[in-house]
Image (cartoon, rainbow, N blue to C red):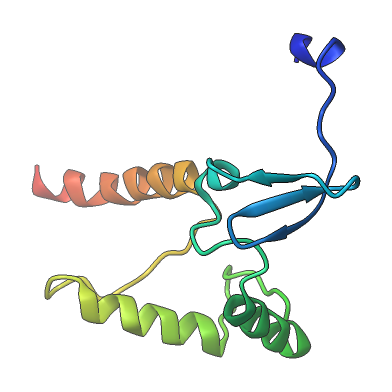
Length: 114
């Protein structure tokens, strides 16, 4: 953060595919995909349409005691991809939380084997 005392941040106005644009119309190739979370480009029309449609119906519900159609469909698709015997999904909001939860969920199984 010390760098930003002399090198100002670049305010970005919009994104389009692999490109970012600032408020002066300068374009920048987003070569880091905004930290690896934007694999399909900025403002992807297919993704935006799906997000928009979902927002019109249900923007969020916590999976603690609740579920919803999109979550069920995703879980069913994932279960079809994994080896037999894996029949449940647990959704987390990021990679580190997913690893933490997976480790915590595996402890009882490891204890049963002893």
